Image 1: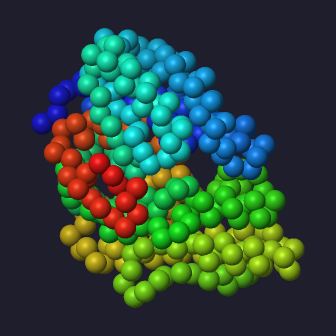
Image 2: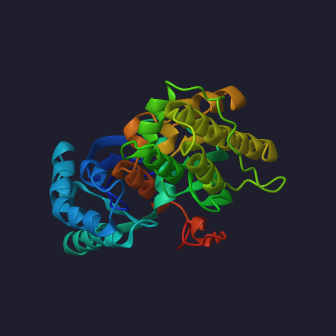
Length: 332
C-alpha cells in the first residue's frame, strides 16, 4: 500500500524546540535532532514567543543539516517534507514553515503541512514493527492541549473531547511556578510528588456535565494557589495535584473507551504521556495501553511530524473536516 523506502524530512518549530528528523516508511527513525531552549526559558519561567522565534532562526538550518547528516542523506534522498503548520506560537511556526517552503521550492520536493496534534498521535507509530489495529482511541496530553481522538483510519479521525480552559501540561507549568519549582513544570512536579502523599489534599476534580469527555483544569490550578498560601508542605501539594490530574485524565479515557466498544487499541501521546503516574493509573484502569517507545517521542519532536506526513500523504485527509469548538486546534 505504501512506497517502500520512502524518506520524509520532518520539521517542527511550534514552540521552543527546533527539530528536524528523517523517518523512513512512517516508522523507522533515521535521525531525530532537537535543539532545546529549556535553559533559556528557565530564566523567565516560561516561553517568551519573540525569544523562541529568534532561537529558531539561529538553529533551523544547522538542525536540518545535522538531521540529514545523521541519516546519511542529502536532499536528493528525501521524497517529501513534512512541517508543523499549527497550532503553536505563530512567530515560531513561521520559521519552520518558511524554511520548509523554501527548501521545497529550491529542491522541488513535495511539502506536506501537518497539524501538530496529528503529529503527537503518530508518535505511537514510531519504531513499531507490529501493525497498529484501528479503531484507535488516543488521549493527547501536552502543554497547550488535551484531546480525546478516535482514529478510525489514517483518513478518518474524530475529535470526541478537548480542553475547555487550561490543558494539563499548562497546569503543571503554572503549579510548578506557584510552588517555586523550575521550568518545565511536568518533570519538576513529578519529582517532588515522589516525596509527598497523593491523598493528603482533596483537590477538586472537574468532570463537567454528565457524560462529557472534555477537560478543565483551571479550577484545580486556582485551588493549588489557595492551598499553597497556608500549607507549607510542597511535596504533598505536588503529589495531590498530580493525582487529581491523573485521575481525571484516566477516568475520561476509560469513559471514552466504554462509549466506543469498537476500539481495538488505546494510546497516550504528548508531553504529559511521559508521566510515570499517568501511565501506571491508565494501565490499572484500562489494561493494555500504548505510549511512545521513547520518552523523546512524547515531547515536541520532528520524527512524529515526519511519521504523520507519511500517512497523511497517503490518505484523503478527512481530518481537515473537523470543526471543534476550539477551532484553532484542528484547522485545515
